[in-house]
Length: 344
Image 1 (tube, one colour):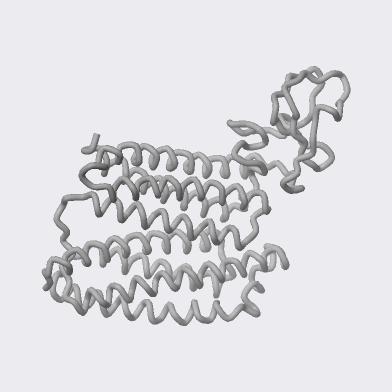
Image 2: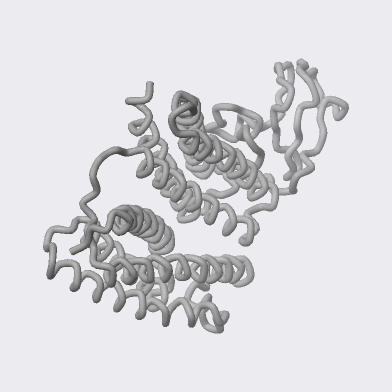
């Protein structure tokens, strides 16, 4: 079983990234409330495809928890029952978590796919944790980290439910995103710590410190970027999506920090890349970091100067998540070689 551990941990990491990407698509398409309940979707494990499935029907068998839309409200079946010729209110209760009651088939299935990836990622991390038990005698740290990731996935699922119940409150979405990045970092650390492969990340002490600064700046940028995204979401609710050009007309102070700090992030990474490539031209991680950094800056420019064109905001988020993961892995590899006293 142990020989499959790293492979399944890597699958878990890929699935978590797919959840992040799916979440970005949910935001891009405005599908966040496609499933207004949790963990089911309109009371179904497999969501409806047509509004007719959510309209009350006479002489129909209903199951406990099944949802209908009536008078622009959600109603939930109290128990299993068969309807008569008229709707009997005693069989139904108003959904109490919120008052959102809109069905859009596309939004529903986009959100459902997002949840499906989340469930698959949860199963994969659970399998990883179960296998990690075999390491308990030889390395307890692997087992403890693996089960902590399972706990984090459970907490993340709960956060997802609170996001739905709050009807996509920006602050809760931000916490949800930060938690996803923590899970990414834990999985990358687990894979790196469990791997017996020799690392190729051989850096001078100066480059290693500079890499740490670059990674720290990325984290700071993500934190400020999440604050800016919260503000943009609030502006969208206040002004409406047709007035995107005015979202940043009077921005919060963190926007200016986020924008200005991107220049420092760019310069630090360019200087680091120049130093590394002088000694070792073929460094794929550094090349990926530069590529993602260019894409990240590019989408940021598009959002500001072209009033958030379709897809720019979720792509900005995806590039940031990928940049975070690659830089963190690079830091772990470089740190390992620093601890062994090997450097260029």
